[in-house]
Length: 332
Image (cartoon, rainbow, N blue to C red; front, side, top):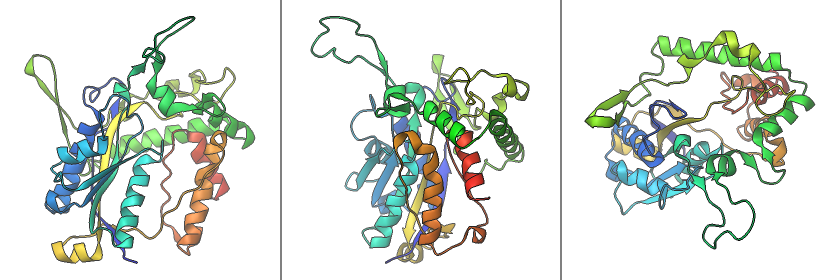
């Protein structure tokens, strides 16, 4: 088994719903992130043997979105590409697949990441191909249907998060406090320039030939802290989840280059991290909010580590309730 190293990383700014990046298709966002990651790794694009990109809202993007992104980044057409859809875990799963390829000796250099344009998700017209004969035949939002709806329990994933809040006794105040702290930290990081090195500016063509260069995430500066406690619940009339303590609808992409030890030596690369272990865990879809705790416990065991051996836990989730529950369950 071979060690796998992350040798570079890059991301686009994160655009808001209908915001600065809404005119850019997901494969174009992915291509920008991949191109920057490859350049920062200081390897030729021709050395990338495989591109793996997570993407959920693929309707209307055309064939093989990861292939489009790879070609857009200059990866030769002779090299493979894979699009992976694991809903919220898609981008990270792409990185894990890259790590597995390296570990198994199937490749020495793999570019992986995720890309999404929620703003450009289309509306669907089911039944139109055969014709509507009777009753309603309205449009269906592909963003909701393909990305945010539990097809087994027939409700929004926000309703599942509300279930977690009730069962795990996570209050609205608990979630608002965490969300407020998250926004404050994001704003402080932006002010300190902490994200500048990882962001690749995006040039977005506009009307009349004008071009706008987007260099910063849109969401952190939009928050109104005074309104957080007064917002109405988003999913249940007496619920706890709001637009402030849940993630926003957004557009963007990120990518890394994963290398073997042989590639590091051959190309004189500077590893930024070694991937020690990776795993996943599943629950019933309505219990998705509990699965991150299972996954973290499992990966610690796989790496033969204890909780206190870890210096930093980064828990990326759509709802603050998921993180609050994880912090409590693992006593972080």
